[in-house]
Image 1 (cartoon, rainbow, N blue to C red):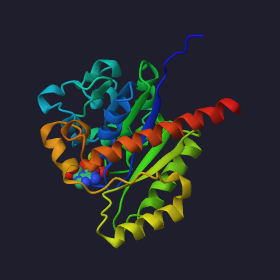
Image 2: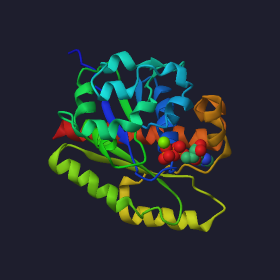
Image 3: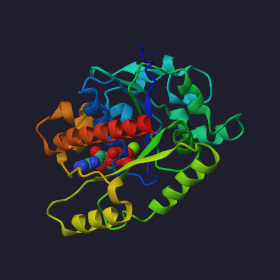
Image 4: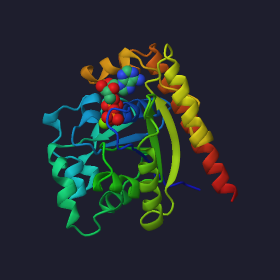
Length: 267
Ligand SMILES: Nc1ncnc2c1ncn2[C@@H]1O[C@H](COP(=O)(O)OP(=O)(O)O)[C@@H](O)[C@H]1O
Ligand SMILES: [Mg+2]
């Protein structure tokens, strides 16, 4: 029986900025694509860091996620290749910074991205890089997604604000997208020389249990250098601790996804 390839859609969200959402979107996508799966990254942040980090500079973003959200362009027309086999991108655009306001008066304002994604096939995974807010852009991502992955930075206030995110997820689940799952929590910028990182990690594991991935992303300068070369760290320096961590994370994510599917298949 031929299987229609409808993608598994994962939103990468946390309303805090600088916690590693974009870094995780880019590098997880690259590591998954390296396993011969097809991945589409949707850059939903007006800052466009995922687009830059994947080598798509501003001049190449004429048709972007803004046009898709307001219904000016079908999603397929905004997709670009990245030069990385199996990895495509819907870039963001500057106009996206006004989209939250524009969307308020539109029909199906929370479903704009979900509707646009309905016609999309041919990918194994769609990863949505969310902006650092819980406004309509992120709500659109949470409504379009099957699951949400939350990067948490290993710092003192890591869990602060997470309750807000968890209640937003709960609200979306109750009113807009009942199937939305918490895909997992990934600890980022872990500093091995710092006891605080261990304490934060223990705290987060105490709170979220098995939802927290075993793989922890270390603080690694190669990760922060890579975007200025328009490359994921996996291509910039595959031997770095950061690249290795994202490769491990991808295999954990794919295993979790396989297990979930097996569970659902059995149910
Ligand atoms: N593991 C890491 N080690 C070192 N720098 C990192 C790491 N993860 C992210 N960064 C850097 O931290 C900054 C914020 O990360 P980013 O992924 O853009 O966060 P967000 O998308 O949540 O705002 C970026 O400059 C990025 O390069
Ligand atoms: Mg970002």
